Length: 231
Image (cartoon, rainbow, N blue to C red; front, side):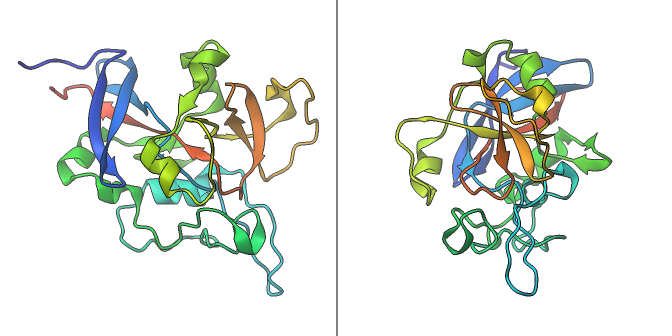
């Protein structure tokens, strides 16, 4: 029996770690449907630090357009040629013992068939075109009105494959929005705005900040599926 996808429906689409990814329809119109992963699929740095000739490490960039994470999510290459410093172990927060380096990992889209990729609409964010993306802070607030709804669990496979070990199944995750102190839901707001702070969603569903090169940030991907897809 054929079924048109409606808001609130779940589908399996694409793979990561050789496991199917579960997506939920969050919004739709006559042209497309916004699908968001039901679970955090992995932990990765938003953007690696740039290393100077002395090997000095900064904290990465909070700009979505040139982030390592964006390039990984939108690549179907077996070996990605990153436009900035690749997410190597040395360039991830924690210096030489940085967690979850992914410079040698194939692009996220290698887990999708050509038919699946052709079913996804391209969208523009910050003057770059995306197939896969992270939600913005504004989208998080729009689709999940309260903090409890924002709380996400990490897949067991993602947790076991991470070098950073966590207890429990809840974890925090990135948005694609740079941090500003005006977006704070913290009881102790950080008033300085640094170009390496990215807005994240905490384990408790609070909008917070995190350094871009930190390697234990959860990845909750999203995409726009064409509206004429029949299940």
